[in-house]
Length: 139
Image 1 (cartoon, rainbow, N blue to C red):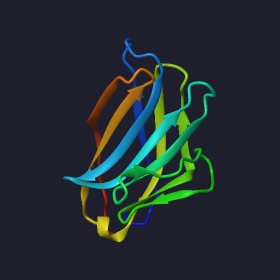
Image 2: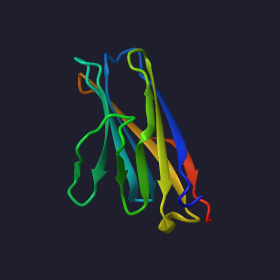
Image 3: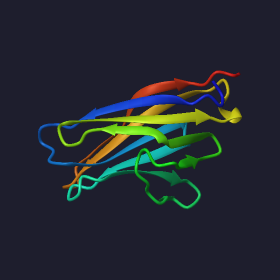
Image 4: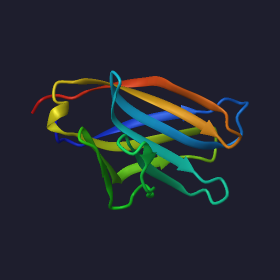
């Protein structure tokens, strides 16, 4: 429902031909409009992970922050809460992103597509592929 935080779990398993996962972009879209686009990044050298949110006005990703930090990223449609978001993996072939999100009143009664896009450290890409649907109830 509008204003009620919910966890979106996105699991991605990389193909055998990939080396190390570098990024997973998860976007929530309404047709051509981006409701929320977040980027998970894995730093291979340090195993650090971070999230950042895409700003459609600037065409760039904002400053990254680690999951579990007391920070939130907002768009006019939704809010991503890092303090309640988490990552399972890497290392290993599978990464699960648990993204804590709430939707603002303009999202009420809408059905959104969830899509994912992944890259590895050698520049291979996969996506944007549909991975789910979110229905936002009115209060």
